[in-house]
Length: 247
Length: 315
Image 1 (cartoon, one colour):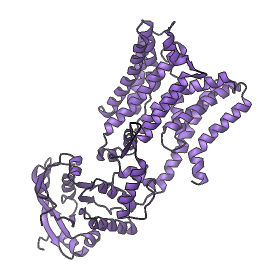
Image 2: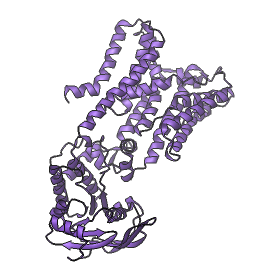
Image 3: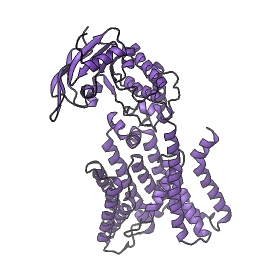
Image 4: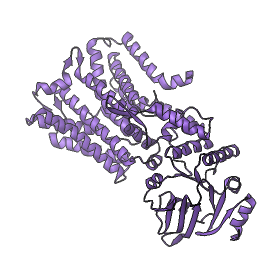
């Protein structure tokens, strides 16, 4: 199966610091692919490059076999890659539907004026939300009023609204409680069920073990190993701690 | 909506209605047609300025220059008319002055990265100096074109045109702020600039626009002020500075609590002008108004901040 997204030989330096020294990543369509590694392994840099926030010094990125280059986050979005950063980038004091449609608001023509079509935005938001979490029904509610897991759902709805085929989740369960974490795991499974390809960056080995079809472990800016099959949190931790490169 | 939410959303508005009824009953001459028209005229000047300040505040920027920019625009209009330039051209120049000042504030904030609290103070001082430079310290007065004065003094039937203009500007500002993509983009920029930027919103443009709308409002108010008084002087809009800020902050205590909003600013302007007018009619000393204004400014922020705090604790 051709990879949905592949990064090959990615190099990135920040001054004298070599953050990535030839990292490669192949993500198959419809899989949940986790990227793990200790601090400084290069996870964040790799994600920034895939999200179009940073550009690689060397190396190639291809989507469905076609080479692409992301000069900006917008370019990555247009290619179907939506990244949900750890801070979620929501406006807490605005309504759920306003957050989901931020920057891409729907309008209708009233007496020749292009006015917001709030009813349609609320309805479509509800449709996106129903795919993920059917307990959130009031699209007028402010994001303030939501729990951490529910906020994640709002951010993921935005990715769905962008019609992204690949969703990159950066530490989605960091700082969440047990129940909230379970909600987010459920969200990720819903994404997979909806046919999305998911790249998951996480420190939480039990979350990775529960979700990932495959895991790529990075170590000091290089590929350490890519694992497939039944993965336990303990096994993952062993790989990260030992630097073991055998599958 | 429970009782608490109703108080939070409409409390200030209802207090305004109560104030109106109280003044109708107890302030001598408050209810006279001449006085009520005078109140509405003052509300016109104040509310247009407050709309501008509100737009800047929605983008999370403070425009402390609007009153001095308004005076400068007025002086530009007065200068041009008194040198026998056609009045429509003078009006256009006055409005343009406001827009240019707003663009300058936008440039200072988004390109030079000077916080608006500081940059608009600088602009205010520059505008003040320019106004004195143009007038040489005296006021422009004279017999001006009747068509021009109609903008400030004319009536359609019994209704002063200035009130009609104000209502039209209120409607336009309401639609822009709540019903258009541009309006929500300004709001998103003010709420979370980083989130807005990552969603593809031109956040710099939104900040420049918010500050420029404030300049535009100052220029428009100058037209009505000069036409109403048939004179133009530096500092003529100076009193609107604190009043305009107070109207906007008072407006943040109603309709969409803790958020600057156009309708709130309009009602805020109504309450502040009624209160000032009523205090004079009730025989209060002139300095009471300043004290009252200070209390309104502080109390409004304290009240809307408590809403903010509660929102934060609800996490």
